[in-house]
Image (cartoon, rainbow, N blue to C red; front, side):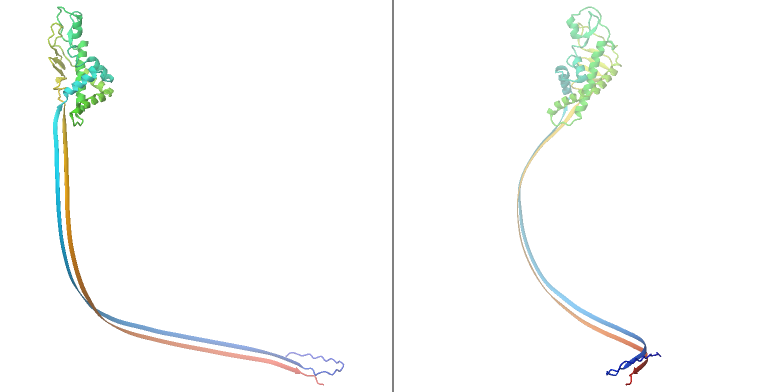
Length: 353
């Protein structure tokens, strides 16, 4: 308990109201406790079953009718004309004529081939340059040279010798020409030709192409030398100008008798054969002309009619059953307690008069 100190003061008396002193003191304690428990349970079940049955039927009626009519007419005329022919042309003569014209008359040959053939004059001077014995000089020369020199005498002409320079040049000139013409014939006949006018130009073009191949002439010239290396003229005699009647040179790989020349035992340098061959070109030509006129008329008429009717019925039944179950359970529990404590003091003092 608190002590209260009271102090009295004495003052001069004054007429006033009576004073009063009041004092309170207290203490309160409140204790409260609460517990709550709640449980809810719920169960729900729903079951449904249904059944549906339907029946339907349909019926349709149709009728269709179609009619068609067509007419076609065609008028035509045609005309056809064709002409074809096939022929074989022996080009040996053309080869000889074109060779002579190019190398011996017009001197159009070029390169080593042009120079060589223009000098030896294979075709034009076969007889004027034929090896002849000059009884005056004792040399072998061409017939023209011997005639101009007027070399007449009683000396006996010698036997032909394959190593004699003039005879060798004369023979090799013809051998080389035979091989050259044979190459030209092979090349020309391998080309396609449709008219006779083309043949001559093809041969000219072939000679131009051969002149432009430098190694070609060298190869052919060497082949001629190798052929003449096997010549043997022991059975032949060189005639003088006076006793000459016709060529009669026989040297094995080369011979010139009458009008026939042989190289390596094959007739050559004639229209019938070159190096043992008859070069021919087959010309196949055809001309077709066809004219046709067609005129057609077509008519088509078509009628179509269609009717269609139908009905449809449908029936159905349906049943459905539903069952529902619901359960709920709830529990609520509460506990509460409260304690209240209070204490206090009160003092009141009033001074007496």
